[in-house]
Length: 173
Image 1 (cartoon, rainbow, N blue to C red):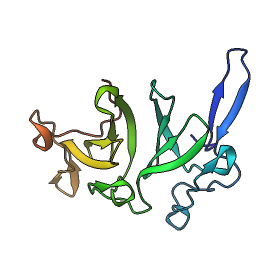
Image 2: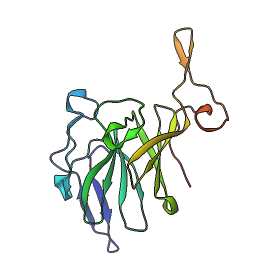
Image 3: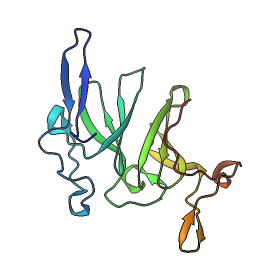
């Protein structure tokens, strides 16, 4: 996470950096540096604050929740931005027109080619159609209640965006 790298350990125990490197930001929290996301091979592709990964077993693509973005590292070790942009928010859309605040847990539903993303600060679960890059909020919303100057997030069971979460962090399919 803090070294801004994706590394793998082979069957012999050797650790190899496959993405991220010297072109990455020095601070994930500095808004002026947020947009330094570079697509590229190996260490020429930069990461900012990778949190979680999910591997598509069919083609060995790796999806990465990275601060405000969802990144894709393919089997040739080329990293690209799948969704999200430098502006934090809660906006559905196609690819980089969608906005996240803190994407965290990831899970892929391979039969439908859908990546599910837990957007922790927005208190919701989003889906990304991997064919079209369309991002949709499928559960939860960022509704909070003001309590004497503080905020409280409700826990409510329900369908879709009627359900309420409090900082969800992971998802399993």
